[in-house]
Image 1: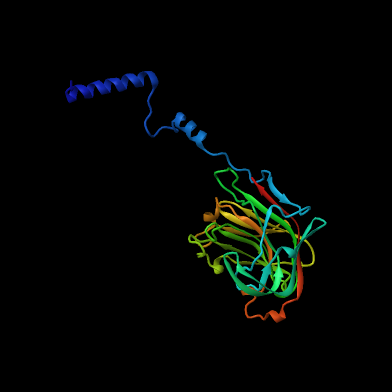
Image 2: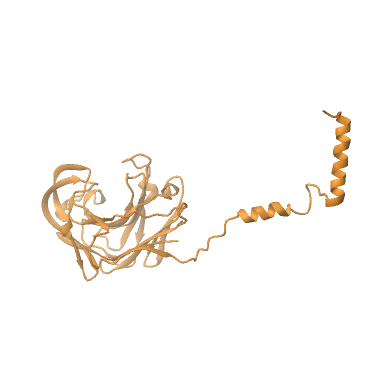
Length: 299
């Protein structure tokens, strides 16, 4: 039965006074937050991430026996390059992978997606890991680290690279840890690609390419090249020295790369768009890229 308003009001006031007499009451301007709510909020707060926590080795390649964990290309490529990739150019000896480049005319498939025959001026090698790697909040591995010890090939026209990408390109992204020109042995560049449609990048080189000037010749000896990949940054490291840290923004799409997985690639291309307006007659006839090891870490 519905009570009259006055009786309901008196009953409510009596109940409130009775409750406060036993438990105590405070207004909304009290000295501190409700301890129960505070405890619940503290329990839900994530633990701070230790920036110095150890890295866990995920995978390594020492090039001691074979290339069974890599896909080996046998075709042309892209970017108006003039080399044909074939297995014969890959040699393992004393724990070193050598990618041998030489001037040789050969006819072969235009690229892996186009079997049309094309004439190439050089032969070289390219390998990609069969397994893909990358940070993900789903797995709890929020940072990844790609490392390699490499001696780069000297000579005009040589375009060596240590990089990663995912298919369909560029929807999974591409990270160029290092791209070098053999005729400029004291510098290299890094770059990022990303797109939402297959074959169409929406990144712009003006916002993503970073040139790194060095004090050493990277074709004269082995050096260590690293990428540290997180949810909001990509850091390029050379011989334990940080050269550049890309921070995520609306122009480089780094945040869109997080959660993707990519193959690691080692190759030496020849010519192409990386050497604009240059005749292949000015390129060296032979050269060699060498790789001592590759490692992948996570944490």
